[in-house]
Structures are given as C-alpha cells and as structure tokens.
Image 1 (tube, one colour):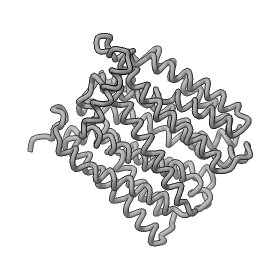
Image 2 (cartoon, rainbow, N blue to C red; image 1 turned 30 degrees about the vertical axis):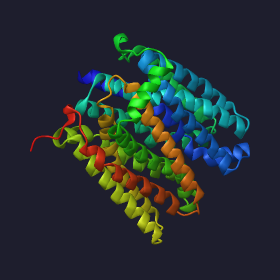
Image 3 (tube, rainbow, N blue to C red; image 1 turned 30 degrees about the horizontal axis):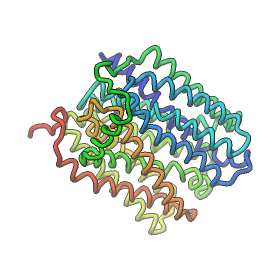
Image 4 (tube, helix red, strand yellow; image 1 turned 90 degrees about the horizontal axis):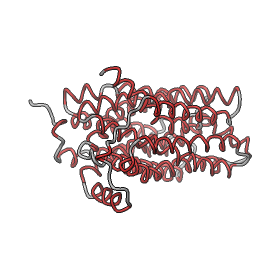
Length: 402
C-alpha cells in the first residue's frame, strides 16, 4: 500500500510538474531570450502569457473529456502536443514564433495540470486524499526549487533553447510512466456520455454550488499570488536588488521550499484538527505575512531580506491552504472529478492572468506593485474563508469531536 501510494504520488507529481517546469526554468532566461531574439520585455512576457492562457482554458475541455473517455488517453494526447511544441519553441527564430509555439505548448500542458487531481479524487477521499495531494505537491514543488537553477545552468552552458530540450524530455518520461505505471482510474461504467450537453450540465452544477465556487476561488487567489511573484520577481530581484541569475534562482527556490515543507503537514494536521481548521489557520497566516510585507514596502523598507523573509513565511502558510482546499472542493464531486478539477484550474489561470495584468499596470521598478498584488490576493482568500467553511462539509473530513 505504501509503495503504491508513493509510486502514484511520484507519477502524478511529475505529470503535474511538467507545465510549471516549462515556466520556472524559463523565467530566469527571459532577459537572455529578449537579447537573443531582439525583443523587448513586453514581447518576451507575451510568450509566458500565451502559455498560461492556453494551459488555463484548455483544461475546460480536457477535464470533462477525461470524465468521458478515461484519464490516460487525454494524458497521452496532451504530452504528445507538449513535446512537439517544445521542439518548435527551441527552434523559434523570432519572438512571434516563440509566442505561437508557447501557445501550443500550454495547450499540451493542460492535461498534466488537471487530470492528476481527478485521479487523486478517483482513488481517495478525506485525509487520505489530502496525504496524496501533499505528496503530489512534494514532487510538483521540486519544480520551482530545481528548475530555475537548472534553467540558469542550461542558459550558461548551452543557451535558452536548451531549456525546451529539457522540458521535452521530462514530458517524454511522463508519457512512459503513464503507459507503464499509472493505472486507468476512471471505470468504464462511470464514464459519462460523450456530448457537449453533459459537459455543460456538469459546469452548470459546479457554478451553481456556492461552497465549491468559494473554495475554488480561495485556491485561485492563492495561486494568483504566486503568479504575481513569478511574472515580476526576475526583473525585481535581478535589476532592482542586483542579484545574479544564479542568486535569483536560489532566492526563488527558498519560497518553494517553504511551500513544500508546510504542504507535507497538511494530511497529518487535517487528521488531527480537521481540514477546515487547517485551512482557516493557513489563510490567516498567509494574509498576515503578505499584508505586513506590503505595509513595510509602502513605508520604504526596501530590503531584499524583508521581501524574501516574509514571502518565505507567507508561502509556507499557503502550503497548508492549497492541498486542504483542493480536497474540500472536490470531495462531493467524484463523478465530476475531471470537470471540477478543470474548472478550478481555469479559475486559477484566469485569476492569475488578471492579477499579472493589474500588477503590470503599476510597475515602477520597486517591490510595491508586486507585494501589493500578493497582499490583495491573500486578503481576498481570507475574505472567502468564512462562508464556505460554515457550509456543509463532507462526512469524511468533518471536524474531530471535542
């Protein structure tokens, strides 16, 4: 049981990490890509936005499709598209062609982002699901720790084009593991009738469930806060604070390590105190640290140690929030697990893109816009915790008796 549990976590974590790997390796290379292709900051960032857009909206199709035809076939298709697009990205001669292939690459990445969540729900519920989700995030979170370092080394030793060779190989490994290790977890008897009407009905059900939507939005604002950091941290830490690309990669990795460490406690704390209580504490701590950071930046405390230290604390608390909230949101929707996971992931992408755009409109070369965006996301998540947590909860994750 333990070996099977760990094997599933490893495979699902790798699949989930393929998309973020193609982002996190890529971010430290943005200045080098701009110089190589003769493109400005805005043009290079469009390649990041294109990836996020298709990765987000593609999940709206991929999730219900996995409810209809099973989990493995959409994974094969998505990973195949991702590999082909990675080759195109590596060979791109202009920023325009890079944006186009990144658009296609995001479309391929969406399967790995949404289907593993549905597989977790297929196999487990309650605190067991939280344990697997936290293990999955352990593998998933290796990406923001290692991939910026790997990306920096690839650029130094080879070029930014080598990044796409590495991510293409990661997707190829994922394809092999899906074929040889991952079982099909969607039984034929539970697969829904393959038509647009059934998919739309599933989305209507989810959109009409206020508990699900509030929980999904808590996750969305938590992830969006990281999007704000992701889109702006390279320019801020390298150009404003003067870090080298390698030092930036290390600073970036610190926040991921905090997130990983806290997320591994979710299952244990959920079993002892209840996932709803863990969620409340996690969101409150996240909001307190992020808001304090923004207030200090407004007060002209413009220090690298303050930024990295408080973000370390904030993302540590966020590590408790994401697994617990995801399990709570999917608990009542076993038959719609793919559709529900897709809607959650799309909300994350939309919210993240909106936050990136808003923060981008206020950029002034200081940490204030980025930290303000992160604080706003944390306060939005805090405001959303009250109503859904008072609503009905699934029996397997009820609060423990006093």
